[in-house]
Image (cartoon, rainbow, N blue to C red; front, side):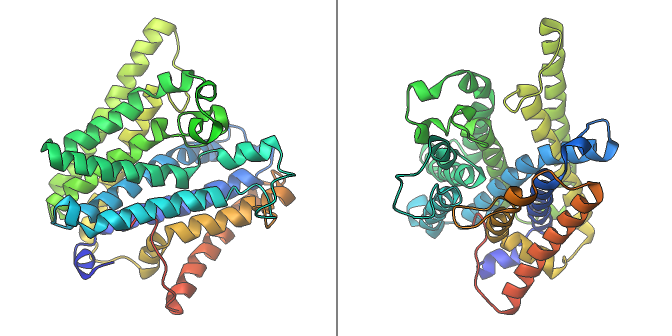
Length: 364
């Protein structure tokens, strides 16, 4: 990071992205190893884990959008002179490339003669890295549009986020494979096997971009209680909207379905993310610094993400724990494994820092 960005480091963002990536590590570990008989929502511990797992991606994506846009807007230069533009485009290419490489269908690299239809489907599906990469490209394009139209970041980013949220049910109902080949259709909904299509997930990145732009344009605002309070009230507002949607749905349809493109669940998650940011930012007011390992974990999110996926799910070149011990551990073994995985990932970044090996953050 530049000297300027170090001086403007926002502690609660460090805490948020370190929490998000470690939460993702433990969530994937538990999902891979915990035996089916323990996956009962009636168990309070599992119910809590299940809820937090559902919040991991929104927190992770929102934080990615916040950090990228904050650093982008810290540079007080016109779009065509902003060095962050080219750096951001290169990061977009890297994230999308790594996303496809993690799902590469064959160990032979160039011989695709034995690749099955299922393997191609997995390769073309969109996961978190593809999603963040393309979403950050939208942030760059929209930042240019905001500058040219003078409409401002809040209006452009906020409107774009709402588009991804509101159109999600419609996009989910369309069979995009009838109109596009799988590599393109995979970005619109889950029909092609995607875990994180653009609708609604890009909306969380763009929502984070609104906060990132606000933080960049209001230096030191994050150190005030009023910032945390306002953020909390906005979060409560989105939660209220979610329950209003639930009420209308119940009145008209008798129930509210909980699926990822449900407007109720989308706005509920966004509200909770904002509330969580509010609480963490308020707590961080009394903290002048955080343990170095937390900052290092936040700086190495891309490395942690890739390494823990290779360990858990494997790749075309290595078997993962999912192939060896899928859903075979009891509660204690699973919790122990998750703790070990977190310790391994933290130890890895500490060793890298000790050896002074240069590494890159996920979104800078």
